[in-house]
Amino acid sequence: MGMISHRAHQLLRFGWLQARCCVFAFALVGGIAVSRLLPDDLPIARYDLVLVYGVLLAALARKVGWDSARDTAVIAGCHLIGLIFELVKVRMGSWSYPEQALTKVAGVPLYGGFLYAAVGSYVCRAWHLFDLRLDGYRPRMMAAIAGAVYVNFFSHHWLPDLRWALAALLVCATAGTWVRYRVGARHHRMPLALSFVLIGFFLWIAENIATYAGAWSYPDQLGGWQPVSVAKFGAWALLITVTFVLAAGQRRRTPQLS
Image (cartoon, rainbow, N blue to C red):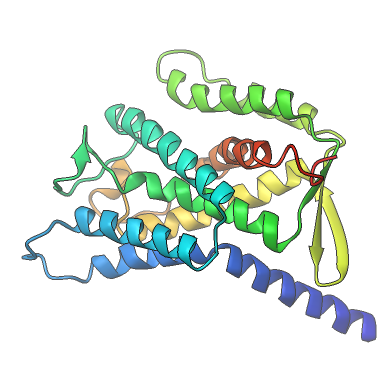
């Protein structure tokens, strides 16, 4: 009975730490959801309001110490990479931002990058709160695969889609790589590839929530909200490698990587 109680306590503590990692994402999506409740005749467009809110939220995160200077650099990188991603995918019709706004460039509101910044914030916070360590990590190989994953999300519109081949390469590249993390005084570990799958699943859940809140819309959601395709789960499991490589790269000179 004592063992069951201990495991339940560890699970609750793990869940609480995960929730703390998601503070920025919760606040961002929550703000987007609240913005939909505002009157339509406001003098400023909703997307513009969300951009201002995102900037203030990022400044607050830095001010209260949620993010270090190193974390802020990673998050800013995620924001930029995300905006480039959005510009290409919206142009190709993968999804859209149907409302008007002053801060819209080529159909993409500038706040769109904050959705990727939120993922970067989660990874950086997890590194701190779970005291992450990596065993057997191959930084150059992972960087090459993450770069190929990012490019493939663009190139598959004109060239063959290589995501299954890249997924197989990712499994090979992460074979023998373990993520060590701490919950309370207890240390645990899991395969790095499994962590990508789990994060991808929860990002797919978050994407359903975000599209329901009106953050953006897929073509089949323009006539009314529909659940996001399960295929996006796999896409996120691959795309999270880009954020992870950025965050890990900022820590390569520390004893966190072995």
